[in-house]
Amino acid sequence: MFRSRRAPQLAATLTSALLLVTATACGGDDSGSDDTGAGAQADASGSSAFPVTVAHKYGSTTIESEPRRIVTVGLTDQDAVLALGEVPVGTTEWLGGYKGAVGPWAADRLGGAEAPTVLTDTGTGPQVEKIAALRPDLILAVYGGLTEEQYASLSKFAPVVAQPKQYNDYGVPWQEQTETIGKALGKPEEAAAAVEETEGRITAAVEEHPEFRGRTAVMATPYEGMFVFGSQDPRSHLLTDLGFSLPPDLDKEIGDQFGANISKERTDLLDQDAVVWQVADVTEDAAKLHEDPSYKDLKVVAEGREVYVNETSDYGNALSMGTVLSLRYVVDRLVPQLAAAVDGKAGTTVEQPAS
Image 1: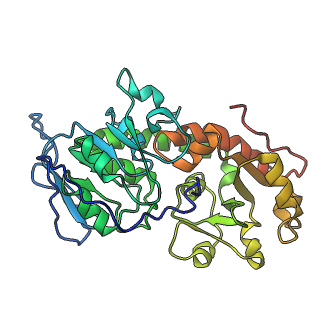
Image 2: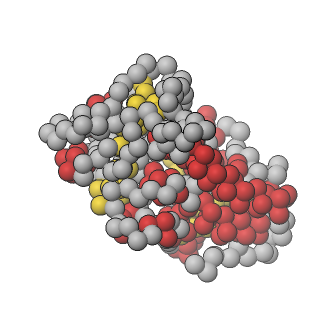
Image 3: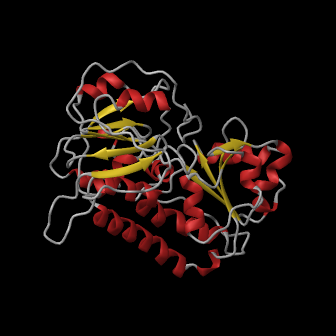
């Protein structure tokens, strides 16, 4: 499986769950409106924030009471849960092989709690029976690609918040991911504060590097040729948050998906003010790219405007995750690399982060 979510499609069929718990998912209209129930927000007297209704791709789901046993099916949803002071009982493994599927940028959020049980997405969809055995009272699949059948199967034993319908699957911006999960947990104010803190880190970087504004950049990986990430991928979101613009015809070339392989005739998409490569081996993959006739003579190469990120490092994993917590880790490492790439000096070496 493409570790940077190169092949994120989930299979269409799930095993029917046999375990039913008292929490149920309430399907609403499919208008996609972001409405909430009358008791959705806590009032001045401190009354409960529940019930709360969250809209998503397959309608809407009502969470009747504060969830205590949260399972994250969305591949990066655990970070938002942890940022809001909760520890999931189950997470879905994507990359890194971390205990509990919790990266080092979020590990301190576990406190003294037991690490979550890790589920595995093997390409056949969520592990329904294992999820059921965790007795969840909320299932989050915000950064995900549930099919309607999978959503219905999971909804038999707990409320499910699926991916928002206004974005491609796996295309929800990290801000909205965090705010949606905050709403589901009855913590909208905490979610807003977490988003504000991360945005503050990014804003500080932009203010320190005004040279990023007006420049173009693109994220790519040498997977089965040259794979370029589209505007809805979290990696591309970060570039635009930092002030860069994406190639104007990027999404036209990629289509309605998070990214795609480009032909040799369209390597001009990579010839930007900066190109960020996620690679398995920085030295070997850079050498292979520089041997490719369709790429090696581009100005971005000649002028030293390439940035390389080891995709299997903590840094690379954090970049792929693109969450409210991992981005704080990424900004400290990526921004100096981008600054070196666009300084206008071909001889500047874009250094690899120490860790």
